[in-house]
Image (cartoon, rainbow, N blue to C red; front, side, top):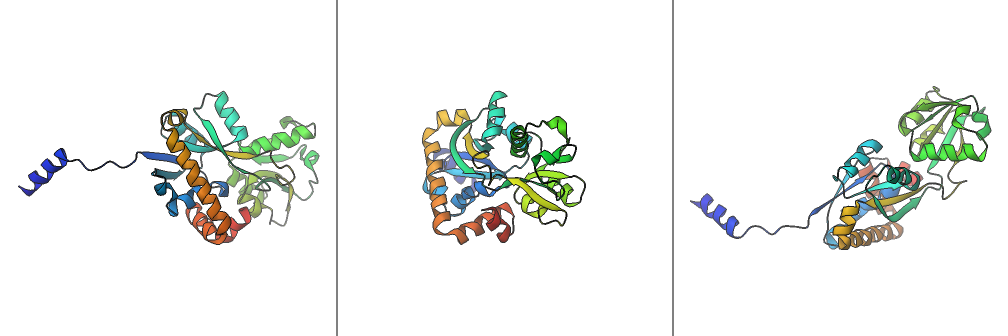
Length: 258
C-alpha cells in the first residue's frame, strides 16, 4: 500500500525537473582547464546550469559527437575550426579561450639547426591538427613544402614518444609532450609558438542549435568561464591543483604548461 501511495503521489506531484544537461567536451590542454575550476567552485550551479564535462582527446570522435548533436559545446583551434566549417560541422565560435605562446612547437635532432634543415628528414606530426598547421605555416615562411621531407602521421603524444626513442628526426607536438621531448640528449627545440604568437588560438564553440534555442545559457556559460579565469588569476595555486587533478597531470607539469 505504501508503494502504491508513493507512486500515486509522484504521478500527481512529479519531482521538480532540474535544468537540462549541457554536455561540453574538453581535451587534455591547460587552456581549457578553467572549465574544471568553474565546475569544482560551483560557478556553473551559481548560473543555474547543469554542465557535464567530458574529456575527448580524439579529434575525430569529438567532431563526430558534435556533428551528431551529442555535444552542446567543444573546443577548436581557429585553423581547425576553419576546416570544420568547410566540412559543414555545426559549430559557432563564441569565445577566444587562449593563444599558444610556447605551448606548441617543433623538437628536432641537434644536427637540424633551422626549418630549412628539415629537408630530406623524417617529421612526425598529427595530421590536420594545430601541430600540422604550425608546421605548414613555418614551411611556407621558408619556401618549402611537405614534399621536401618524409611526413610520418601520428598523434601528438606518439610523435613526441617517437622522437624521444630516436625513431624520427623531428616531431611537431604540444605540451606536455613538448617539454618531455626536448629533455632528450639528442634533441633541441627548433621553434615554438613563443616566436610566432597568435598563430594558434583556441576557441570555445557551441552547436548552432544550442546557441539559437538557449542564448541565456550561452551567456551563463561565459559568466562562469570568466569567474573561473578570475579565480585562476587571484588563486593560481588552488586553481592549478584543480586543473591538474582533472587533466591527470603532475602539478609541476601543469605549471610549466600555464
